[in-house]
Length: 307
Ligand SMILES: NC(=O)c1ccc[n+]([C@@H]2O[C@H](COP(=O)([O-])OP(=O)(O)OC[C@H]3O[C@@H](n4cnc5c(N)ncnc54)[C@H](OP(=O)(O)O)[C@@H]3O)[C@@H](O)[C@H]2O)c1
Image (cartoon, rainbow, N blue to C red; front, side, top):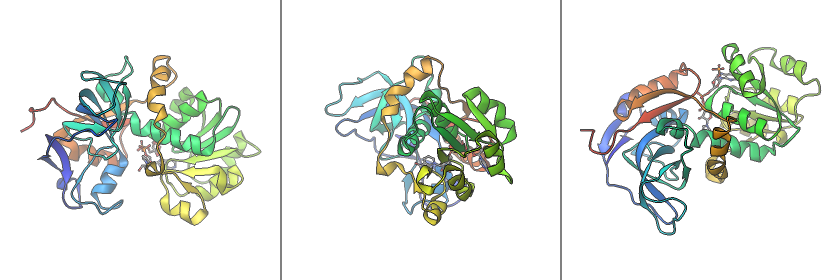
């Protein structure tokens, strides 16, 4: 099968489409013919050697496609089903991928829509679970307009939380449409949040990693009320929990999201699609951070089309 791989760290030019052995699903896993795979900011960070030392590396946490092999013990889905989910071992940006955690694609979504979901909704749900977000609490989300942030806003609203979202001004109407009260980032952030929540907030989630953990701690009344998914160094410095998927994933949301989508209570836009062999351009757009709101997605042609 064809897959995206890099064998040395560097710019987008180190990305290659290579031929790799077809993967086999283990017990409880499924293999899919990938039709779309999500692109995440961690992809370019990994490619630049900023996150781990692994070489060579095949990228991709999330994908959507059609089941072509089921592992031992799988009864929930079968060959031919449309599914989306998370690749526990990575390597989802390929013609075939093994999904460890998966669910049927909600009926109204196409493959690209579905591939945009897994990492954003899992990361958002994990962080909300770790914070203990529940009905009636006030949650502050830093980076609320991004893919994880907008997922966190919507899922917190579904839980009955009052959400204040920090984002750039061009995204404030978008945040209101998701059910959050928007505030702008930058100098004076604390005062702007206190104008909406004079006693501070109950909980805060940092998705932007923009260096505001001290402000979030002050607003939430202590580091124990704050979680970050994006500021590893700041978390260590300020005693804040850094949430990472390898410590336990909130995969329950994969099976729950369909009902929220079909009832109009959740959506995550696709900002742009790229053919698998244009992955380098997807990395450039992702790193520039200049894409319209939503996820970048690689569209994978059926096996045999490339090369
Ligand atoms: N720990 C984990 O398990 C995990 C898993 C997946 C991803 N991540 C990390 O999570 C982060 C976010 O990923 P994503 O996919 O949501 O990114 P994204 O879709 O690119 O969104 C980033 C958002 O950050 C906002 N932003 C930029 N500068 C800001 C500032 N100074 N203050 C507040 N917000 C600011 C932008 O808002 P505006 O456009 O409104 O300016 C943008 O919408 C990345 O660092 C990624 O590596 C962590």
